[in-house]
Image (tube, rainbow over all chains, first blue to last red; front, top):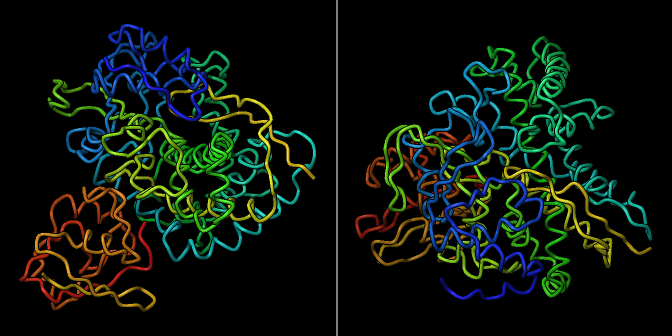
Amino acid sequence: MKAIEPIEPADTHADERARIASLPIAEFNPADPQWFVDDTAGYVFERLRREDPVHRSRSPVPGIDTYWSVTRYQDIMQVDTSHGVFSSEDGITLMDFPPGDEQKLPMFIAMDPPKHDAQRLAVSPIVAPANLNNWQGLIRERTVKVLDGLPRNETFNWVDLVSIELTTYMLATLFDFPLEDRRLLPHWSDMVTANKLTNPDAPEPEVRMAELRKMLQYFSRLWNERINAPPRTDLISMLAHGPATRNMGPAEFMGNLALLIVGGNDTTRNSMTGGLLALHHHPQEMAKLRANPALIDSLVPEIIRWQTPLAYMRRTALSDAVLGGKQIRKGDKLAMWYLSGNRDESAIPDPNRFIVDRERPRQHLSFGFGIHRCVGNRLAELQLKILWEELLRRFETIEVVGEPTRVRSSFVRGFSHLPVRIPA
Amino acid sequence: MPKVTFNGFGGGTYTVEVPSGTTLMRAATDNRVPGIDGDCGGNCACATCHVYVDTDWCARVGARTATEVEMLNCVTERADNSRLACQITLTDALDGLMVKLPEAQH
C-alpha cells in the first residue's frame, strides 16, 4: 500500500484516516451512515479506489444486505450509461422492501425506458432554458429578501435560515404551493428519506407513511384544483395535464412528488451549506473569489462536485456482467458512489483540493450521467449562482463559528446545522 | 483540416478548423465556442452538446447512434435535425459543416 500523504489543506481527521487505513478492507461497508456523520467516508473510498475499486460488502441492515460498491469515475460512468444492463426499476437506494410494501414508492427516477422517458418529459419543460430565464428574477428577489433579513452580530443556523429557506421557497414556487405552508415541504422531504433501520432517531415506518399520506392528501387537493383549470406552468398542473402522467394512481403520484420534493430540496440545500463550509476551509479560494466574482461560474460546479449532495445511486444488474474485473451476477445490486468518483485522481486532477477556478469544473458525477441525469441541474446551478452573487455583494465576511452537524445517511450527504455569524 | 461553423442562438458565428478525426463537440470546447458544454467529456451521457445540423448536411453526418437517441429523448427542445456533437466525427467529407446551437444546454 502507498504511504499516506496528507490531504491539504483541510485534513481535519488525520487520526481517523490512519485508523481507516489499518482496517481490513474485506469488512468495509461504505453504506454505514456513521462514516457520513463523522465525514470520514472519503478515507474509506480512498482505499477502495486504490485497493478494491469494485468492492463487495455486506451490511448488517436487513433490506440492504449484500451490495457492490463502484468507486472509480470510469466504472461509475459505465454503470450509469448502461441502463439496459444496470436497471433502476428496483429502486435508487440500497434498501429493499418486500414486494408490495407500500414504503417502496414508484417514481420515474426508479423506472427504465420507455415509461421513464415519458414521465420525465412531462416535468422537464419546467426547467427548460426558456423557463429558467423566467425564474431568474423571482429567485433573485427572494434570495435578496432572505439575506437582508439575516441576523447580524449573532450566531444562527445557516442550514435553517439560508439553505432550507431558499430551497423551500423555490420548491413552493415550482409547485405553486401555498407559501404560508412552505415549511411542510422540507418536513415531507425528511419523511421521504427517513429510515428507521439506518437511523434510530428517524420516525417509525407507520408514522412516516402517515405523514406521507398527509402529503398526498394536500397535493391531491392542488391536483384537483388544477386538473379542472386550464394548463398552467407549475409542476402539479403539468403532471395533471401531461398525457404520460395524468392517469397516475395515488402511489405513483406520491412517488413522483417524493422525487421532486427530495430532488429539489435535499440536494441544493446541502450544496448551499457545503459551499460556505468549503470556502471557509479554503480561505485562499475565498480571496480569489472576492477578487474576481466572475469566478462564480466555475465556483458553482466546483461546490456541487465537492459536496456531492447525493453520495450514491443504486442500480440492479439485469444480467451477468464484468465490471472492473469483478463478476457481477444477475440480480446483484450496486451503489455508484458519486462521492468517490468525484475524488478520483484518474479522472479529476487534484481532486482533494477545492479550486474555484478549476479547469473543466463541470465534469463531475454529482448529477449522474445517462438517461437519469438530474433533470433540475440547471435550476440548481442558477440558485447557487444567484446566492453567491448576492452574498459577495452584501457581506464582507461570513464567519463559520463552529463544527457542522451532518445528517445520518449514506444517501443524502447533508447538514442539519452550521453555526454562522455575520458581523454588522 | 475540416472547417465547421457554429451559429449561436442569439447570433454570433464561430468558424473553427480542426484536425480530421476530431469530434464536433471537441471542435467547440477546444476552441472555447460558447454554448457547448460537453459535461460528460464525450461519453454520450449528458446531452449538453446538443446541436441542430443544417438540413443540407443531415444526410452527410450520418444517423444518430442508439445511445444518442436515448439521450436526445431527454431533451425538451429536440428537433428532427438534433444531434449530440460528441457523436459526430469531423472528416474532410464534412468540411464546411454548419450547425445551429440551442438556447442553452441542460
